[in-house]
Image (cartoon, rainbow, N blue to C red; front, side):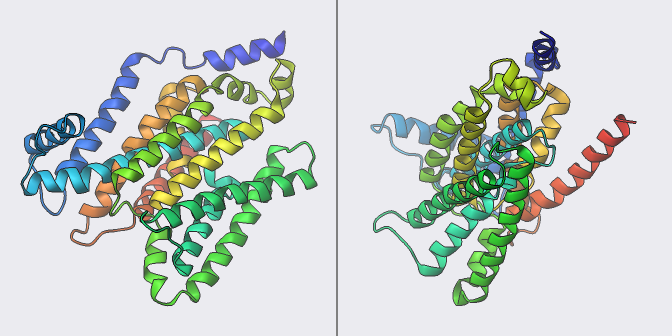
Length: 358
């Protein structure tokens, strides 16, 4: 009975969070999207941008209507909209994965990369670039396939090693194995970069993250992944609340700890693998965004995870906008921007949490 009361108390914290905050997050994401379509090396007025998007959407739904023409419409519909949507969906995917990992492992430093999945996905993509692996008729599909495959292979290796070391698959063991695996994968990537020759510049830029040249096929891939694997994570909000009061307590309230843990880890790996295959390695989104959102929403994962998705989308769209406008016409890797902003925010969050615990 006491364990159930703890679980209910954890779930009720932040119940006062109203619809207004959800609307605020959604408006922030919408504003970030509109700014991303308007600002750039060629500024486009907001009215022209909205008109171009509405015209393009009408043409996509009803082909009998002509697609909008002109320089502004071409820039908005073929370059900026797919790029902004890719950044937003990647941010949502990474934030959701990080939120789920922090809840599962009860570790504020956890995110999707804690498992080493990001490193495995990065290695797969680098291998595809170095060996020139492609699929005829489907541009960049080779990189996507090897990246996602690297993510799943990384999960398989990490979980196998963790199980050999600790049959209970404790969170500390998983984190330790994930950190060691990440260090090893990064070393292998460095070796490949050293011998990659003419591919070095492209690989280095890709490993720091980039949303340049994204297409609607990337948007579709991210959206499908978010709906499938993200939907599974969102359905496990109650179980993640149970993990907040400990695995033993979760078992006592009827949670199948091993099944839930494996389900969450697989979904996180899939989401991170897809995000890395589309935009490269982007740090701090899954680490910092759930922390910021938790300050507003509270720790109830049934509310925290969807809010983190929207906040992550807004954060990464704004980061992508900064990456291509701050030093225009030069473009910064988006991972550099998220690391700079994320490091400062993380220090602030850590300071506030330590100050509040005194």
